[in-house]
Amino acid sequence: MATMTVSLPDPMKEWVEMQVEDGEYASSSDYVRDLIRRDRERRNEARLEELRRIVDAGLNGGVSKRTFAERIAEGDRIAGLRGRTNG
Image (cartoon, rainbow, N blue to C red; front, side, top):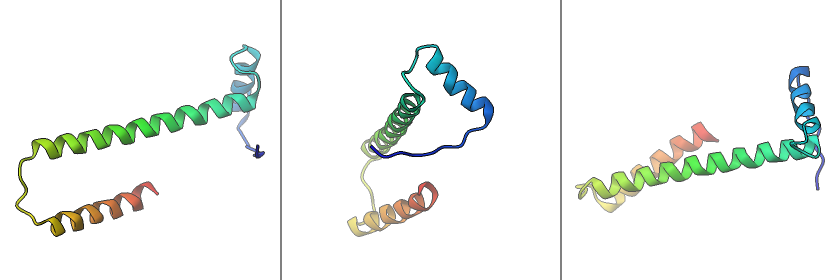
């Protein structure tokens, strides 16, 4: 397992230590790992919800008048914009 050093303001450090002292976590590393795991789950769920929304919109949108190539180009354009804003 890799090691990482993280700098925290005193109030955050105290909060992490309090979680360990309260018995919520065995160590500060366990707490940080749990935060990262939950953040990843939250982000994955948000992405999944966005995909569901897109699929629903597509299913309810009717037949497109654009060609397949035009739709692919539009998808590539949108993916490029999202890549610049999310990356």
